[in-house]
Length: 350
Image (cartoon, rainbow, N blue to C red; front, side, top):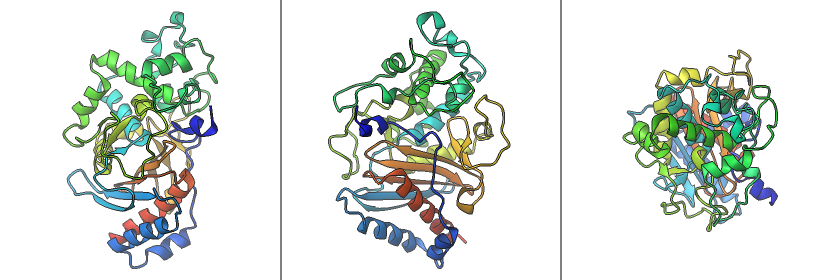
């Protein structure tokens, strides 16, 4: 498998890194900021990108009752069906787990028994899956990725977990693994008797109706790679949804208004105990955080990388922000641009 293929489904790096900016530079950008300041910053960036598929969307939503603010430039439009990736799907999965009464302390052997080849399932809890501390390896490193290769959640679990050694003892370390999310999705289906798409519609269908499973037929940004380098269903339960940026922000804004979000963002050690340590890479249930994001205080942040495009969805100072690229801008560049635009947007409301 090529290096590019190996990174296609990596929702975040193992450290969930967003590059820190020089704050003086940020504030020099935002003096006298207004809505045109955001547009100017977006246009400036795309003009310097030699990729003809370059396109950036940036958005902000202050509450589920307010109208989203969305800016775009280049080969992406505000009403496009975006491949939303892990930053939308995985917080939604964690929220549904909590709403449906799945006990985080349950071990997964009740669904994936050890005598059927599921390694140390008596020692892996639902919480370990949500924290990416199960030790189960990421299936994206193990399966062929091409536009005609369908990788089902069940198949991904068989490839990466069944009869396979763990990377480490459950609860002792961290390794980002999309296999964890596919296991969580199957647990939800067996626990509730409903499919994951049905559960998404139940909890988010009214508020964010455009969010749905990717069927390869969405109104995608014109800058998206065509053909997409792997089958649209391959990310599985943790990243194969599409929808608008507005609805992605609405889903996270709604979750953040619910009591379950406090548990999701209490921040944890890999063994599942609560952590009070500040840092840039806080570990939550289906989400990540930073105790002082770009000098703006504590934030919940999920950075995603689907290979051909990248995205970030975040809660910062009580608002939801997002950024999506239509092309492969790279995580570091997108993170730097995102921080600049967040500062510009916040300055507009002062």
